[in-house]
Length: 107
Image 1 (cartoon, rainbow, N blue to C red):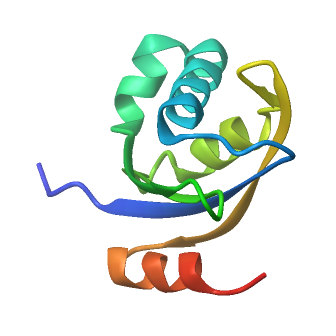
Image 2: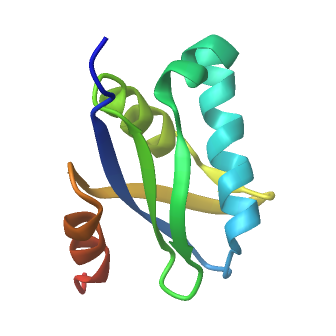
């Protein structure tokens, strides 16, 4: 069995109110669990690497085979903690350094 190839998904949370990392992470996990179930999410090996509450941007780590499922599930989020919100995918990278570069770009 070979090593696990990881992908880093850079996302942006668009909301009128400022959201902290705990709220965003809870909603991401909740949405993916509802969509794919516990077994499906376990295959994703999902981890939140970092989240910047000021800019509303963060980085998720998952396996290369499940990156499209993660992107699809995360973009389905329409509210966080009862507040209207949308999550956009800014990019996907194979290295954390490049993902951080994507995260720091101005948009």
